[in-house]
Image: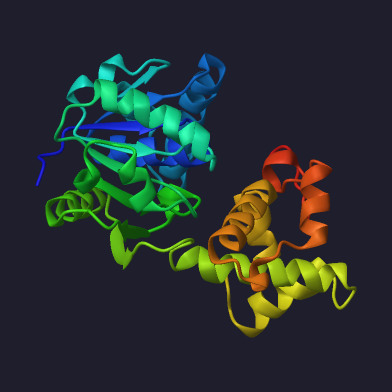
Length: 288
């Protein structure tokens, strides 16, 4: 098992920011990589604000703590700083071509013992391992949003993933006070094979006029005590990500039950992507 000191996080979107924050709070040296300085600057502000807010919620004066956390994170648009990385958490968009490009850079710059943790909702971990020279070091690490508030992570073992890599993943997550549930590789794993079907069928119910989005979600929150309904969950994840995931499941399984809802496609085409765009099945203010 690798001794973990330096954690690299690829992609400074919502998931990458959450992982970087948690890793820094756990005491790791963190490098956050993105292609855009504008995105990185926004990520730095978001992390500082998140830490301050968490401190206020706990009744702690956390301004100094916020500065301490930011001090542990390096922000960069290149991969050169990853020459001594012990573990990489890759969070780039759910696009195979984009991921291939990122792993080309990682292979060039990361040391041979470095573990690659793929934060994906649907892409095969075995397939990712196949484009590297270290398939035994590749593991799926499916974080849920928002990362700092979720205590469990779906971890996926690829065909070649070694026991040492699993132990390294467990140590990393444990340091962040997160528990892992280890499952085998399959398109969509456990979470999204179930969730994407549920969301897609909920969208169909709205499209058919059986119920409104509010009514669908109320049944799940009131009758089943879910914290949020499937359509609010879809808005949080992003309807474009939902569509991509369900399309991938449809392609991988060749099963009509994964055929994407017509309404879901139309909403993505219209730019109604959920919380990140300000409107999906529900509307969101810019302050949320």
